[in-house]
Length: 277
Image (cartoon, rainbow, N blue to C red; front, side):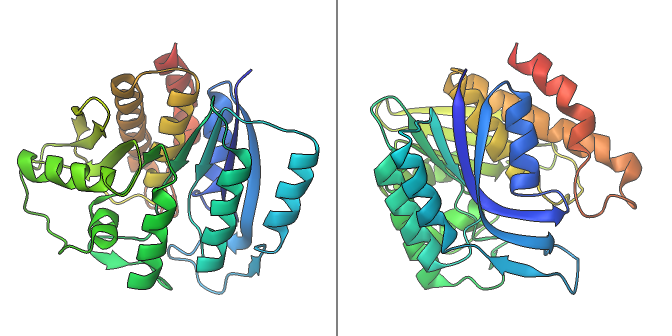
């Protein structure tokens, strides 16, 4: 049985980070260990008055205990990290748990639509780029790629521009960067990956749905990590991740007013299981 560990925060109510990663990856038949970096009463996307408990100091203790048990993972996957200190601790975790037989995925959560999320800035983006240098796969959106590469954000681009961005992301040190939220028109949207060793690009697109749904980046990253963990190749992993994310958005539309805080991904888990067969 394949085994992964995901390191990110958990919101007790809401659909993002660990509340997405744990059920989605588990549904793919993968034993999923978790390291919560913080506990929030709700996620921060539209809720107010939420509680927050920082668990940064617990991460090294968990790591030391696992090392004493000689626990090994087929993949390590990080999502939202809330501070430079957490990035440093996770970097050490990579050193402790990397093996010749596993891989590391970093979803460098920094911002969207050309803006940083609250609490992040250029210095944080630079530290995140350093963490990405230790990863096999990184999964930025266009905003995050721009911040890490220190280039202007743009929504006007063509295929040549995207491929140039991916080559630059690979120079950070990762083996395979995956750029999410890519679209060349208003009909299709998807992701593009670049295999640095083989100098090969992989494209996957599906319907572009003009709805903003919280947590879709976490859905994509979790499915992609799971697909690669169970042995799917880059193209298949992209296709499954893009198509499942779109299915989740479509399933949410009838309930959008009620489910403004996240997607109805639970309704689509059966489809995900079918996709990976």
